Amino acid sequence: MFENLSDRLSRTLKNISGRGRLTEDNVKDTLREVRMALLEADVALPVVREFVNSVKERAVGQEVTKSLTPGQVFIKIVQNELEKAMGEANEVLNLAAQPPAVLMMAGLQGAGKTTSVAKLGKFLRTREKKSVLVVSADVYRPAAIKQLETLAQEVEVEFFPSDVSQKPVDIANAAIDYAKRKFIDVVIVDTAGRLHVDEAMMDEIKALHAAVKPIETLFVVDAMTGQDAANTAKAFNDALPLTGVILTKVDGDARGGAALSIRHITGKPIKFLGVGEKTDALEPFHPDRIASRILGMGDVLSLIEQVEQGVDKEKALKLASKVKSGGSFDLEDFRDQLQQMKNMGGMMSMLEKMPGLGKLPPDAMAQLQGGKMTGQLEAIINSMTPKERRNPDLIKGSRKRRIAAGSGTQIQDVNRLLKQFTQMQKMMKKMSSKGGMSKMMRGLGGMMPPGMKFPGR
Image (tube, rainbow, N blue to C red; front, side, top):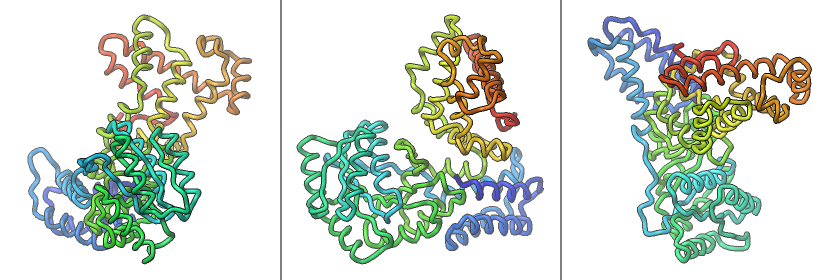
């Protein structure tokens, strides 16, 4: 996410470090590069213009404080302006209504609207502890109704059936009446999309909005369309009183133009980011954390939240108790750890929130982005017998050949897994002893793929 912009800005901002004073000349040269970086990231021109002018106004003539270099002063100014461009603070959903609180989703076809309805339903059920009903008012695509029904089952929220013979307003009103009778907290209404903005679509969605009076009207838009996403959002905002935006497919967008343009062009906050295909791949949008990530400083707060939500606490306590009482950490436990990492979005999802990601070697980055490493390790462990998983010392020559053949890997891959396992086993022993956490951090370096270290080590 935002890799291209992050790389370009990081390189550019290095050039201003070491100056005794921020003058108009050295700021001007750096800002020319910043401007080019933003334009290449497909940020809308009015946003670029205002951003560059604001940074220049604040930076020129600023004296170096005792504890900061001019480069740090300048980077802090850029960070503050990035936050300002994106909205400064996270804006949560407004659910303060007589139940059910009605949320309406709008957007073009293919933006990921129906998937976002399911993701938001799961978010509200698991994080906000709300009962949720989802309903499709898309009477033009029977497949959309069926898709929402399937997704609702997957995320364990209630689905209200609808049919292409019904009118969208009647469908939504019937769903809301049902939710009132069943004391359901939130109703999410999925609306019909189109391939482009047209008058008929806008008239229909205006009528639906007037009938259901949603407390939140969220516009769902594809991040990969760049500044076009902001322009489409503006067209919808002119027709509907939008309350916020869900930016989807952010994991496939290396530029970041949409995230930086939408707030400025529409005046509406981005409330959520869709960061993957899984139903839990929805993150609240925090401008300060995103600005930090863009500047290569990481996003430790989001990483902590991700770990807290993804870790199976019962399994973690069981494992800690086992290791503490002298039990050995075996390959079954190692596989559990890999699966939990996958539940947290995978190694790449976690590493991109750590400071200094750009320092990792390109080949290691490519390996992580494809998620190949975790899948391969799991396949190797699955090819072992239960006895081998409990007693890794049994795995010698002929067994290694069988495991490699069974998992579609090479013997050196099996050797690498066993080496990584041994290092983690040692780390677990250190964790159960005095001062375990600091020892664990030193041990973590060995868990990385070949040629990779934690940034800053």
